[in-house]
Amino acid sequence: MELSRNLRVECVDRLTLAPPHAIESDRSVRDAVTVMRTDKVGYLLVCRNGTLTGIFTERDLLAKVLATGLPLSVPIAEVMTANPVTVGPKDPIRLAVRRMEQGGYRHLPVVGEDGRPTGVLSAKQVVHYLVEHFPATVYNQPPDPAAVPAEAEGA
Image 1 (cartoon, one colour):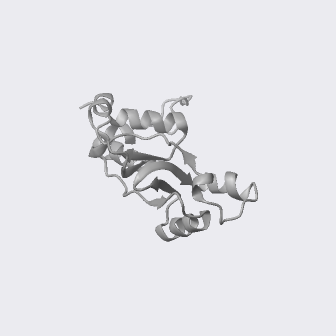
Image 2 (image 1 turned 180 degrees about the vertical axis):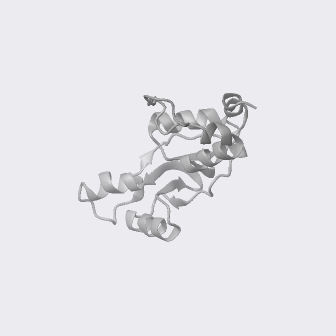
Image 3 (image 1 turned 90 degrees about the horizontal axis):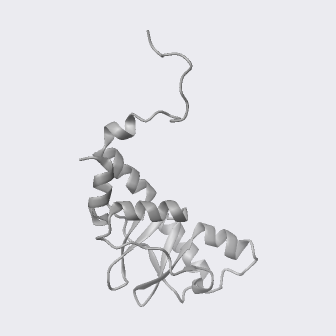
C-alpha cells in the first residue's frame, strides 16, 4: 500500500497508543508535577469525573505558573489548556498527523465518544508507525531534500 492511502484509511486505534496519564481537575499544580515526575511524562490529561476537560504540559508549567510567579498550590484547572484538540480512535491517522502539525503538538489525546480518554498519540508513535510500515520511504530520504550535490557521488 502507498503511504498517503494508508494514512487516509488506517485508524488511530491501529497505532500503539500510550496509556492516558491523567489527573482530576481539582488537584494542585504541585500534585500534577509530582505525577509527571513519577510517571516520567511531559503532560497530564486533566479530567473531571473521568471526562477530559483539559491538558497540562511542561509548557503550561513554564509559561502559566513559573513565569508568572503563581504558587504551586494553584488548582490545575486554572492553568491547564482547556478543551484540547483531540482525535477519536476511529479517526484516520492522517487527521491526527494534520492536527499535531497544525497545532505544534507532541501529544494528542485520543478520546472515545463518551468523552473519556482512551490513550495518547505521540509524534514518536507516528514515526514508529511510518518506519515499520514504510521503511524504504523513510530510510531513503536525503538528509536535506532541497540540497542537490554539485557532482555525482560515487565512482
